[in-house]
Image (tube, rainbow, N blue to C red; front, top):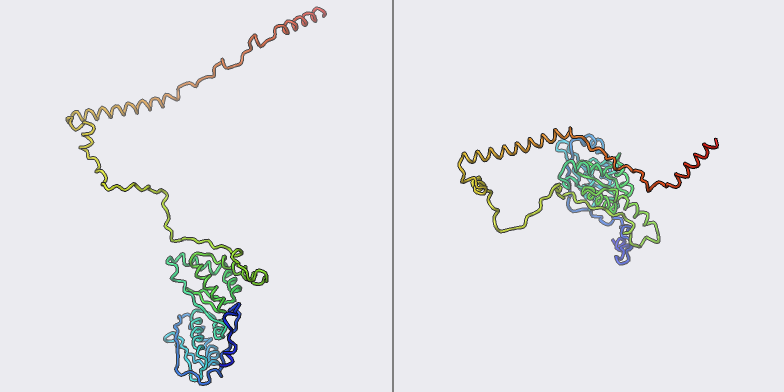
Length: 339
């Protein structure tokens, strides 16, 4: 333990905490082993039974190197990991628990076994509860995967993580910094922010980190801005009714038939007079309609207005030069006499 303490770094002198390598925990640091037995059990779906049966000897072999016991119960559909008296690493049981969780979430054995190393961790992100609408959830999950898995592959290359979208969860295996980036991208995608913005930002940050001049400067001006969309906003109606001014008085009641008759004066007439008046009004309306129909029929027989001849330009005496006309006539007469 003295060697481990001697390698501790002063937090004030830390420039990049991600590049610090923690000292490896060895067996001589805990020669007496663990006092109590710890165990974790994880259920797995029925369709994973065939694959787990095939790869279970490999799982037992990889966990046996760290003195961890692994049991597969096909009847109950569970996987159990336990510590033994020879187990000396107290944290390896949590790594084994994460490994069986990944196997239950359809992660292949080749990727799940990487969790047992110190610089690799896993993160299982639940995305089923972030969107209530099922169709919207399927579309956003498809957007995360991308066409032919291109978006997921780009995220894997930029974050150095293995990512698997399965059902209502997203499983990620990789370094701690990459897992933080993956969780942020997945949660923002389910909140209706396209993953292409995060992919562009990660690519720009990678290039800027290589530049010695811009390494220690603010990168805000280079990063793309993410538009915020409010999907919960209610659709506004096409026609909005203007709100009336508030008055403490109730609205006036609608007029009854008696009120209307009193206003026109018909209430004091007899029934025969009322009928005769109504008949006279109807007759006037019929006459007016008949006159309109008659005018419409006769409009086709009305001749159009012809243009008046007064509009043509007539030559007046003031426009003709009399002297020039006399000279032309004299010349024509002299020519005839010569002939």
